Each structure stands twice: as structure tokens, then as C-alpha cells.
Amino acid sequence: MKVNIDMGAAAGRAVADLDLEELLATRLLVQGNSGSGKSHLLRRLLEQSAPWVQQCILDPEGDFVTLADKFGHQVIDAARTEAELTRIAGRVRQHRVSVVLNLEGLDVEQQMRAAAAFLGGMFDAERDHWYPVLVVVDEAQLFAPAVGGEVSDEARKLSLGAMTNLMCRGRKRGLAGVIATQRLAKLAKNVAAEASNFLMGRTFLDIDMARAADLLGMDRRQAEMFRDLGRGNFVALGPALSRRPLKITIGPVETSARSASPKLMPLPDAPEDARDLIFTPGPEEATLAVRRPPPPRPVPTADILAQLSQPKPAPEPPAQPVFAIIDETERETGIDTVLREILEDPDAAFRSDAVLYQDFLVRCRIRRVPGEPLALPAFRRRLAVARAGVDESTGGETWAMALSLSETLPDDLQGMFLLVARAAINKDPCPSDATLARAYGSHSPRRAQRLLAYFEERGLLVARTDFHGRRVLAFPDLGCETGPGHPDAPDTPQRDAAE
Image (cartoon, rainbow, N blue to C red):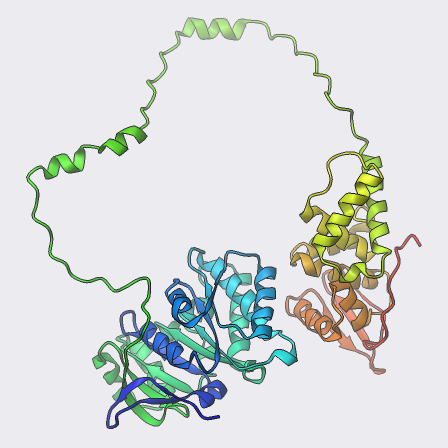
């Protein structure tokens, strides 16, 4: 189905059309300095295409949340865990809901991690949910920087990898990237180069004009035109826009951003008591003012020497405990027993941590396990270790290193990682995809394959295949590897090492 989006007026013709179906296949890059009308262009594109395609906007400044009132977009507050954002993104693709991921209020590193988690969830959606989505990323130079900045290398790699997947591999999954940036020189080249459509706005720096001219196939002398573009004017090029560079003026929009450009306003008449207004606190300030206490009186030197010469008082006897002393060995044994009972249920792998935690609390009361019950984060950690089949206090230095590496992963991935690490330490055959999927709590072997690829991308393991088509997982940090195992083998639930 061919749908043309009215972007405004073009030089030499009445309407500047954008072929929406072609845009979904070829992606779009928007560039313009602050105040050039870049956000206005994105808003025009989103409003015109809202009835035709699902939309997802990564909004670092909270400007696009106003789309929710008129076009029904759901606003997602990014102040969540990365695992939660990934799961929400999967449900967004499944139910085809247009959303705005509001990153306002987070620092730059938190914004990068949240964007990477959300884009990763959309990218890893099941094949049955690969519907077309227009993914708009404003201020893309924040999420795909050309060089490292003040953020950590891990956050930069996660965000840059998610943006690269969006622009390089997203088309086959129905993801059409629309990225906007203030500075082309600050945007990673491998991300910008994947766009086939361009809308170039006003820019003044020579390095940005040179990159814009290279992308549009113009010579350096023609690049001077970018300095003369007015606000809301862009040069368009691409299969969805025009086969030749075409100057267009973006049309009006129906919604507005919460923040607006500053406007000049005349100053009020200077009051005669201006000095009193500035230096005299108001009544509400007077109630909040805290008076500084006076400095202590100086102590005479003779009094200090007398205090130092006094004998040291005898220590007070230790207070008797109010409650009975808890035997930690008995408590740990009781917790291990309850965890073992839970894992003996074959359906436990497919239940949520919240459900298992409630079952754990009930069983602890039945067995009268002394002391305070484990908190939910500690329960998740103990459950992940118990699923791997090795006690956290045993296993030697290699297992201690595996436990340390697992702490760098999200809670829902630790159990699966420890399962394959245990197989490598014990030289057991590599677990099958079905076994790994059960450890993750899923019935999908493909999800297990993607998670192994995720571990490999983070440098935790290296996967190889022997001459018989069997898989071997090597752990460089642990200095060991699993035995060969068939990935397609049926699920074989593992037992504790003690059994």
C-alpha cells in the first residue's frame, strides 16, 4: 500500500511528499543545529504518519509526550530497571502500541542504558511480532557517539550496539530508524551511513557541512548553502523524498512541545525599592531560615590537661541479647532445604520469581527456619545459584570467579550463565538449547541461542562447533570449557551435585 506523507511545501511544486512505505525500507537521517526546526520536522512526520504505522519515540527531553493527548501514544517513564524496559518493549511490539519512551530526568549514562535496553527488547522480539514500526530517536548523537565521553565504556558499547542494530539490521525485523542529530561530526559514522534518506537543515561548522555534502553527493562549494537555510527549511534527498537535492519547508503541526524557544519580552519598570526587594527576605523565607548556633566557648588548657590525666573508666559489661541467638548454620541449612524442594517441582522453571518467592516464604514458615526471611534480591541470587547445582560457599576459586562474573548480569540471566559455567567447570557436555531455555524460564530454544550470543558479545564465553556439529562453550576468564553437546538435544533437567 502506497501512502504519501505531506511534509510541507517544496520548491517548484505545491506539496513535499514522503513515501512512507519507502521510508520504512530505507530509513531517514535528520541533521540541523539547535533552533533549525529539527524537532518540528520530527513532530510533523509523526503526526502525519500516526494513523498508518506504529511509532516508538526515544525522547531524551520529554518534548514528544504531548502526542499522547491527541494521537493516543502511551508514555513510558524510563526510570525502571533495564530488564523491565526490555520486557515492556517486547510487549509493545506484540500488541502494536505506539509509545514515547520519556528519558527526561535521567543522566546521560542512565539514558544510554535505558535506550539500549528498550531497543534491544524491540530488536529481540519474536518473529511473529515483526510488524513495521517507525523508531524515532531524537538527539541521536547521545546514543551513538562517534567518540567516548564522560560515560563508562560499557554504557557506550551497549547504546552504540543497540543503535547499530536498529540502523543496520532492523529493516528485516520491521524496524525503520529515523534518527535526528545536531552534529553529524558527533554521530557514529556506521550509524549515519545506513540511512538512505536525508533532511539536512541549517548548520555552520565546516566539518558538519562537509559531512552533509558527502552524504548528499554535493561538492564543497555547494555545502555553503546549509548556512543560508532558514528555520524549518531543509534539503531533502533519498528514494522516499527526492532523487535530487530538493529544498522543502516543513508545514505546521497540531501539537506542541512542553518546552518552547525563548521569546524577547520587555523588562518591567524598575521599582523604587529594588534594593529592598532583593536583600530583604520574604515572609516565607523567614520561616525557613535556620539560625546558625553560636560557637562554643573556648575550654581552658588546664581543664583539657585535667581531663586527659583522669584514669580511663572501666568498660561496661556487654548487654545481654533480648532475643535468642540464631544459629546461622541451622538457618542456612533450612534455606537450602526449602530451595531444593522448590526446584524439585518441574514447573518451577516456568514460574515468575514473585510466585516462587511467595512459595519460599510459606515453606520457610512451615519448616520454622529461624531468623528474618531472605529479601527478594537475595532470594533471586540464591535461587540462581541453586539452579546451577553448586553451593555458593563451595566449588573452589574457579566457581568463585564464575559467581563474581554472574553478578555483572541482570538478575534473570544469572541462573542460565551459572548453569553453563558449572558444565564447563565439571567438564560436562554443553547443555542443549531446550535445557538453557528452561533455566531462563522460557519454552523457546531460539531465546536461549540469543542469550548465548549476548554472553559472547560481552566477552564472558566463546562458542564453537566441533566436526560432528556439537557445541562447545569456552570461558576465557575461568580457563575451562564444556564438553561437546548437541544443541538440539531434548531437555534433561539437572540434579544437584550431591545427588
